[in-house]
Length: 133
Image 1 (cartoon, rainbow, N blue to C red):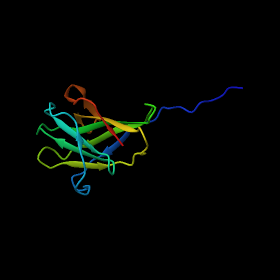
Image 2: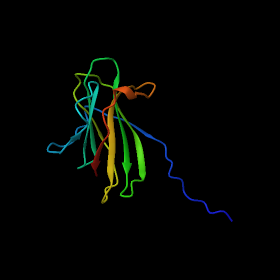
Image 3: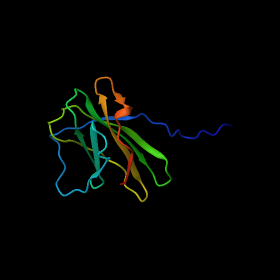
Image 4: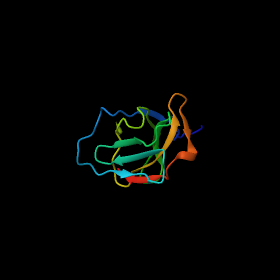
């Protein structure tokens, strides 16, 4: 008899941020570093909101790459949030539904990318940021 262990593998999720769907005011935002000239990403644990900011009118989209980890540092979910409305269109927002438990955290970075091909330009990415959920 062979014992099967459920796989930890999962498909990356793809979401699309919008400037029209906004969170309520008064949230505490935790953002990527400001050294990135292409994109910025922020996360608000209350409500699991991401904010994306396109910082350059270059024809590319902003993408946030994120990973959700449990208290044992095991990745539970991962994905990308794309914002293609362009620089000057305001912030893009996406509301996620993360499990919230002691020690869980989201690991994320902001990059420039090509939305139509889902190509992330890794040389343009911010440093990773960790925030508890």
